[in-house]
Image (cartoon, rainbow, N blue to C red; front, side):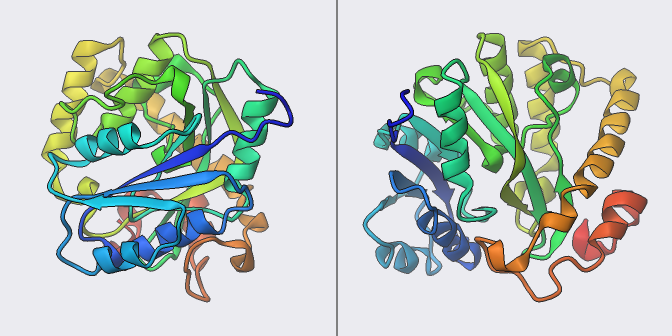
Length: 291
């Protein structure tokens, strides 16, 4: 794309009964400094106030509320409904980190026409927006990706030309994003890291990592059957080394985080205990509300 080109960016959001966080999601897209964005929300027939929030959303939001076969199906429907040259995927309980995210991502795609995937760092938060940990992402490494999924889904954008329909493999109900990254990498897609915080990954009690851990395990087993992966216990030391590096490298991002620049709602003490968790503590020793 030429420097003057302003490609349409489609942000895809699957949603189901998450009105508590959907408002932050919608706001974080609406506030973006980049103007050419469409936000496509596929709601699975929510019975909370999600429909009311979507009905009140501004004109850049396209949405439907109807039963679906799960998150992967919802994303695939949103993908077919979208028309953007660049695709982002932001779950209804997640949000962009600040209001310049899309602008900065588009600049990378403009400057590097050979790049198919742009990803960055993310911040894991509690349900109310308090920072739990900074999820630092390394430069792309296919071997490391085989051992650990270091690409955080809400902090990732993909060229439509690199994707197929369906966008996600609907056999996966948990690791569908991991499968997508590996599939793209093995098909020759070029990845580039943007060294900044792009999104939040909200750790709330109803998220799938807390409710369907058995499905996660089954999905990883299936992934290892489909692609060259290094997910077995013999690679646990490599994963542990990565997580130590992630904590230390992520710490350098903390001083630059200011509450007045956030695109999501956070309490006044949103960084309380972050340094300790980031550098000194293992997840197993965190207070229960952060696990």
